[in-house]
Length: 565
Image (tube, rainbow, N blue to C red; front, side):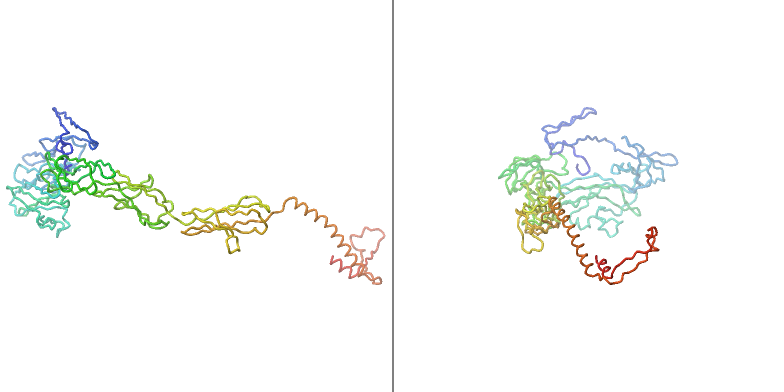
């Protein structure tokens, strides 16, 4: 595109000598020869009529005048319209305009949404009226060059003042609604000139163009009490610079083979040749937009349009493979801040992409990928790409303290005295952990190493065991205390013990009976009166025949012994 206008391929330097446009009646064919990969694109056809797309037509009667917006082109179904009176937008949205029409006013129509393609201004009755018409809707110019922006104007009254302004500079105006003369703007100081080449024609010339000059420019005049304040589009200026782009690159050990292209978002009209410069010296053999050659480190390349050598592109040099670096360059510890940087000697600066294996990573400014607090999961292979060039791989090794150890015992069944027992401790750590075994209530380590074996297990080995895993980053103790018990009673031992107990019970009862008898004999006196108990009324003895009384003899000592037993 040249600004907002498409570029005719027959005038595009990239297609110079390779395109033909063949038209017969209403059939046109574009032929492209010597095809390149850069020709891959969408191609469109445009035709220009000798009439504007829209026209304001006037219909007059004895009592009134009506205006209509007319087009020879097919318009969208039921379109809405926009009407301008003296450059100011009105509320009318139909294809006709029948409000009060003054002979000194100008009228413009457009299809809503396509205001840039409006009709030419029309004066009612063909009389002189207030209007401004710009010679070009858009202009594209190279950085550092000059440009002329022209308009024609007329008024039904006597013009007292006129000026050029840019709405994009309204933040510099004293009053936001009052445009100020561009020649008084500090950004354009010494670079603008207004030329009145003929009556009713004004030209704004801007020299030493910069990219900041890309804007829309309007013309304004005052005639008595009337002030032209148009809301219609003015002339849009796009300022661009030539750039050298790499299309293909092959890297060798000592040099780089590259095809370069002199590119601009807009090109001057006509068939222009290019000029290439290497290290400040003109290359006489090349006058096309492409330049393929061998380049060595330090070579600087620029280009320009032939005849406009003063407006060269910035110097560039074909890039090498991108390089990668990591900060800090020392050991990377989990939780620390780490920055990966991708860089190359490309000029202008290249676009970078970071990868972890095949996963695309977010990239900050200047090809930087940053870890605020790096984790063990971030360990892996990283690389970056720049303009389809891949860097060497970079291993990010994240070191971290041992994780919580896990412990296990083998065999997991009953431990028999005299058998072999193996305790195992494991923990995830980088670098690998060193292990130490401890037995509870003992200050010195019991053993070292990931595996602790007891080949001849004895009763004194029973107790609580735990392991400690450590490396230079930190340490961690096992949360599980392993309790190792002595031999358990077997079934045969339980049977033997039960037989012994059964045999001892009768002997114990015999001893107790004999002891009781001795005590009774030693504590009973013969002449002591017996205690008489009346059982006559006892229900248990009611049915005993011929028994009136049963005498029971007992002594106090006997009762005490019985209580004791």
